[in-house]
Amino acid sequence: MADVLEADYLVIGAGAMGVAFADEVLAQDKSAQIIMVDRRSRAGGHWNDAYSYVKLHQPAAFYGVRSEDLGPGGSALVSGTEVLAYYERVIEKLKASGRLRFFPLCEWTGNSSFRSLVGHQDDCQVKVRRKLVDATYMKVEVPSIRPPAYGVADGVALIPPNAIPRLVNPPSGYVVIGAGKTGIDAVLFLLDQGVDPDAIEWIMPNDAWLLDRARLSPGKIAEGLSQMKAFAEARTVDDLFRSLEAHGGVLRIDDNVWPTKYRCATVDMNELRQLRRVKKIIRMGRVRCLEPESIILEAGKVPTNAKKLHIDCSADGLAKRSVRPVFEGNLITLQSLAMCQQVFSASVIAYVESRYSDDEIMNGLCQVVPHPEFPKDFIACSVATNQNTERWLRAFPRWLVGNRLSILHHDRLWALVIAGIRMRKFMGPSNENLQRLMEEECSAA
Ligand SMILES: Cc1cc2nc3c(=O)[nH]c(=O)nc-3n(C[C@H](O)[C@H](O)[C@H](O)COP(=O)(O)OP(=O)(O)OC[C@H]3O[C@@H](n4cnc5c(N)ncnc54)[C@H](O)[C@@H]3O)c2cc1C
Image (cartoon, rainbow, N blue to C red; front, side):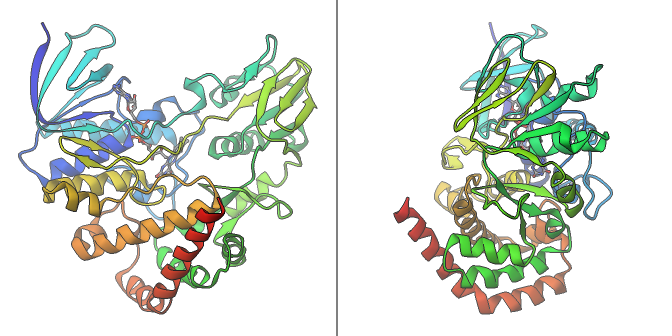
């Protein structure tokens, strides 16, 4: 017979979003009891499977949970190892409150049940007094935990990015497959180790617009708000990106190639200079198959050989999921409410859960902002993020500005006020223009 446990919330998934949610609920509601389960042996989700040289790609100052600082502050990033140590600390702290019970190596089996993956305890049934919280919905994928989506013939040397630091014999060359955040990290790591840029071939199915990390740094947000003028004046999506690029807000690897994707990946100027040293870029679409002597791509093939090492960086860490209501009766589905700010979003959802009780009002405050994929999504995501932010500033400004996970928290109040005044002039025209661009893009699609 299954053990029966009882809690107010059953949180499935101890990744960054599940933990940020739990932290905020426990802070807001001093009587709340939470049971959290995860398949993995410890909290931190996909960070457990990441390559050893992974780092946050946005400042640590606004990553993690609200109640605990991460990193030295400012624009500093921290390593994946530090992220994992942080989550260990946070989980211990939450457990010490006596109100969080964490069950690692346990799999949710549907409804309110979970089972141990290693047989260390009996199957459990949870009597959930309030809500089930699905913190797995975003389906973050990293290359080390899934096979590539293309064919790989016998004898081809293909490794995930995790295996680069374990190499014992240098190959004659490297073929990096994928140009998202993971591909960028793999190329930078190889260059950092002194690999000759000409020894790297980089399969870039699409060029993407990149964000200049300096613009995301704490204290720089008010400055970025002045980009609103570009939003107000752009005649087309391309026009908008041209204008943002001219002001340094977005970057691209090759000035001669117009990007067709936008996935929130960030770089700093030094990294961009490094990436530009790689000249052998293969733009022939996605890989279909790796054969011993050729790489078959959507738009042709290129030669390869057994002495080259292929590095699979093709997993989609930010898959676009279909939008669900966040609050549906006894179910909460954690999703992004601000463009590419998942942990902050989870904390907002927890705050709204603790302060309100009507699903309609709560979903009104928590409009989902799906991950962007194309440049046009940048517009829809910016509009939706701005609308959510305006709602939150009206409904709970003090909490919002006091929350370290909110980018707004890191700007000086006077800078925000000045930016607000400057923005006012462009706010109406900017919203109208973005709306128009969105409609045009939808009718053109
Ligand atoms: C390399 C990389 C770098 C990134 N850097 C940043 C950054 O700097 N800043 C930023 O804001 N975002 C960053 N992101 C985005 C990042 O994905 C999110 O911040 C966040 O870590 C996502 O966490 P999550 O909780 O949604 O997902 P996950 O980390 O995937 O956690 C979900 C958890 O659910 C568990 N689970 C799933 N199904 C079950 C089940 N049936 N039973 C039990 N458990 C289950 C899984 O084991 C997992 O631990 C980065 C992403 C990647 C891939």
